[in-house]
Amino acid sequence: MPSTHLTEFQSIPTSGARGVEPFDLDGLHLLAIPQLAYDVPDTPVDMNGGDSDTDLLLLKRGDQGYEPFQRVSLPGGEDAEFFRIGDRAFLAVASIRTGKGPYQFAATSRVLEWDGSSFVEFQSFDSFAAKQWKHFTIENRHFLALAQGVVVPGQEDDNLPSRIFVWDGERFVHFQDIDSKWAYNWHAFTVDGQHFLAHAEHVGPSVLYRFDGEKFQPHQELADRHGRAFVHFTTGGDFFLLVARLQSESQLLRWDGSRFVVHQTLPGLGAREFAVVPAADGTVYVVRVNFVLGTPADPTTDLDSEIYQWRDGQLVQTETFPTTGATDVAVIDDEEGLLIAVSHSLTADVRFAARTILYRFAL
Image 1 (spheres, helix red, strand yellow):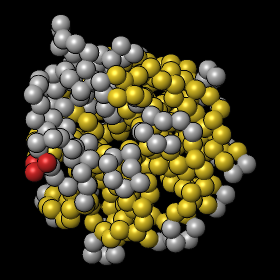
Image 2 (cartoon, rainbow, N blue to C red):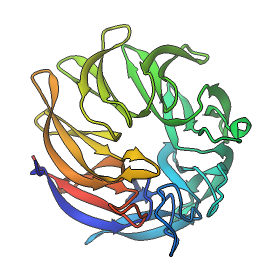
Image 3 (tube, rainbow, N blue to C red):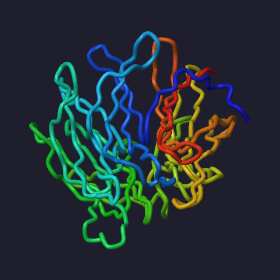
């Protein structure tokens, strides 16, 4: 079922790309791509191997597409999150590990600040297997949440919970810990006047937290395990939350006025991220990218990812497109329409030198 919506616009050389973050800043159209690892010559295939002393790539839009703008030495890159506080601009980068093997998951994750011409370090945080930063606001308060942790035999005492920080006017300070062992992601949203924060966890339940004015309190379980990411959309007066799960089927949940209930199960394993594509006619499209199947010792990375369309109260898979170890998907709205950016962390033969692909999305 080849895609008729997607036409390749640009192929960007990357290595172990784990995210793609588009943003506009001072008249520049920028793209941040964190990289997990570089290939080490003459070494066996290992999706968890490689040289993790990598750079964050920053690219700017030119006449012929995105071109190099800045490289920042940030090892084991897993995620980049752009946000603003007043007239200041920041880029938070999560580092999952350092080294070339054996690897150290006790790493430093950093927040960079724009100085008018480039990004420079603003603040650093001790982290352990950091996966994702998420910035969000509640009223006038700026929060920055870090999803982290991994279960490593012999390093259980070194593991850290996910953490939420809050802006104190000068820097981010600790606000609250969230129980976790192997966390991946966050998603903040408001429904019926209530502020929620979804937390994706691999080995335990993914939990939805509600802000009570003082702390984030558990509201309900969203998935029993294998959580990776979330996205929400509204249609027909209903609020929906998609839950991506890697080793279980993903689900579409519907808000019933007090909690989320299962509305639809999406078949197939391997889901890593979703993105909602806004169409001018109000039609809801969702892009799902798939990461790997199998085990780390014997992974299958050459997978089809999917495009869904909302029809008759359901998400209907309408098309597929090829991906290899896809990790993230983002929508870019430019003067010519919509671009879909997809980061690939592995090739079909499980090497890190995969490419990040930008597609033109056409209705």
